[in-house]
Length: 55
Length: 287
Image (cartoon, rainbow over all chains, first blue to last red; front, side, top):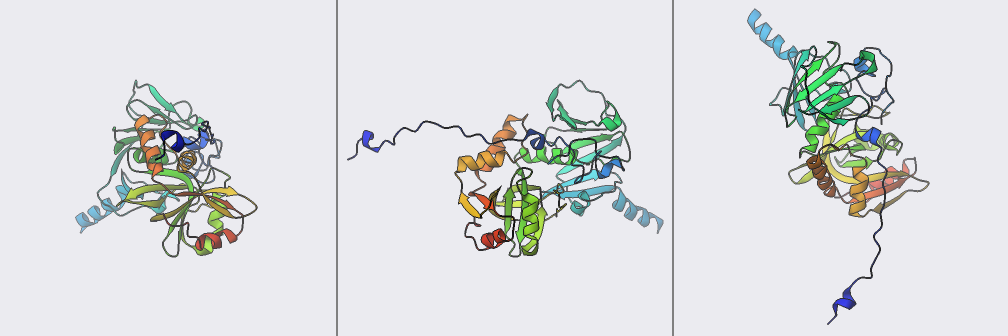
């Protein structure tokens, strides 16, 4: 019979992995001047881009 | 008969129906719809979401700011979304006030030439609906092959979504979007839906398919597929989602939903059609 000591996995220090989040894309905040309507797109009736293009 | 003509005319011009991600929207009023939203027009049916439109300013309010997107839109207490543009001065060019479930609302337009659901309100509304237990929108290219199999290629801007869409051109029955795809669970299975919010190739289609493969895109000098750890998968998918950062319950739902989207593979790919052949013969494409 194995004891608790024998079955325990060796301790591994926790690691932190960071994955980049692009907030300007994630919050749907920016018009996509070439790809969508809105004040910078088809819905603006010819007005050119007014915001940084989005994703 | 004049009366019958009037009724027919009313049905044609008074209400518009859109279907996005399997959610049916009814927009009251005689609106015209340009591409790409026009691809999502649907036959009249019982709507999930009903929207009225008023030309004129919205009633004043005293609700506190809940979330500022940093650009076009802000959310205030009372489920009030205001869209502003330098083109229209300080006042909102569009304000939408919804009920707590975002299934009923009124949109106030400052200019009758604006469309009530112009970006970004359409996508912000859908994000609020999905975050309340319906599904997740991902920054992804969605491809349905000739066998009806849906594959999702996920990545932030520049990851290669539009490139992948173009590589699949001959082998795809449909490319539902080269930038934004909705994933929902129906009948115990995951399904992907096209959206009007496309990428550089302007590819979008109102079609859906069972989801059979999820791949996180990494451009490389050799093709390779590896299954990634579930916790890493959730983190990387979350970074490519459009969650409601201001709503704890919706964030919790989104994370739990993403746990069910798997297995997830990292796909390193060369920018040529060899990756299509690899995936077409891959046993990985079965969830």
